Image: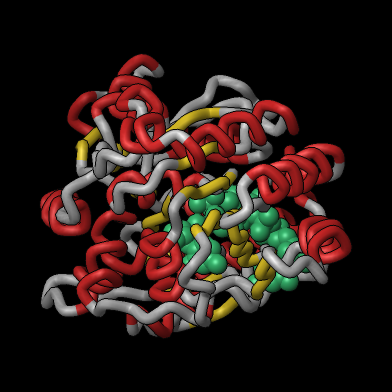
Amino acid sequence: MSVVGTRPEGIKMAPVILALADAPWVEQIVISSGQHQQMLEPILDFFGVNCNQNLAVMRPDQSLASLSARSIEAMDAAIAAHRPDCVIVQGDTTTAAMAAMAAFYRRIPVAHVEAGLRTYDLHNPFPEELNRILISRIASLHFAPTQGAANALHAEGVAEAAILITGNTVIDALHLAVDKSPDLPFDVPEDRRIILVTLHRRENFGDAITSVCAAIEDILMAVPDAHIVWPVHLNPRVKGPVETRFGNHPRVRLCSPLPYPAFVAMMHKAHLILTDSGGVQEEAPALGKPVLVLRDTTERPEAVTEGVVELLGTDRARIAARAIALMTDPSAYRDMARGISPYGDGKAAARIFKRLKRYLF
Ligand code: UD1
Ligand code: UDP
């Protein structure tokens, strides 16, 4: 049983689901929790993934407790109905954690894609750090994207034989999108340089969003040819303040969440990316785009170590100063735009496929 629920799970599970789809030795059931009612569907459509069942757990402005309760109950029913030999979950969402718990309660083995990411701070990212620790305690197979992630699992006592370093399946997905040479979703002014922004983490709600918006105003004042493109997350806690601040700005293009290929095309077009997204931190370095991370911690230190991603937090002055420097100093920009991809070679799903087969037979 392959489980998805949110946008990044759709993107990162699609290569695995597609690899398993044609295998004669497996009967795959794809379950969506429906945690992202709107944002997941276009992703699955793009990759040609069909879900056997959608559990429709999303509610507007959902609390973590109610989302978790609905998810575990619905997952339990799905597992009881389909009786899988193995449940595959990805990442650190509530969907993934509750599917793993539901499988555990029915004594069904769990395989974890993107295992071993850690910040060692339970509140950053919140609640994802706890979700992934929980999944690691439950899982029988751990697909670690990097050596660092595998080391973290070893250090927590996970047996070496249960860990496989695969690369991140997001790079497989990125290759699939790039191969289709996606078009930009709308025209952007050719005489301006694009700064692409995304923001959605729970720990950034409130003051942090306000501070990021103020930094963006500072950047627009200081860099006359900067143009912001911001696909705004559908969460009302994000959409509300961002639309209030930038709904009418001539050099800010707010838009709905973009379909995956359109977002990939926009990353390609962008000069600089400001984000608190996990997936974007992995994809942008592969496209040679500098990323300023609007978070205090990251579980993806590899690109930071390489110098192509910088961890900035959400302080207005800090974000503005660094973004303005990168927009105005070509040599500082070149240092960060080196096209390094520490997160995979696009063959992660094939490695996962082989290991799963060995595990199941
Ligand atoms: C979730 C994950 C986070 C992941 C992110 C990817 C959890 C706890 N959080 O956060 O780890 O990084 O997805 O984007 O699992 N909404 C819609 N339509 C949608 C999606 C969301 O309207 O298609 C709105 C709803 O009001 C919903 C709210 O956004 O209640 C929050 O969605 P939720 O999945 O709880 O949190 P995310 O911030 O999206
Ligand atoms: N993404 C997308 N459309 C958008 C914004 C992001 O398809 O408008 C993709 C992005 O390329 C990445 C994934 O969504 O693969 C990241 O999802 P998100 O930032 O929501 O979650 P996270 O990775 O932080 O869990």
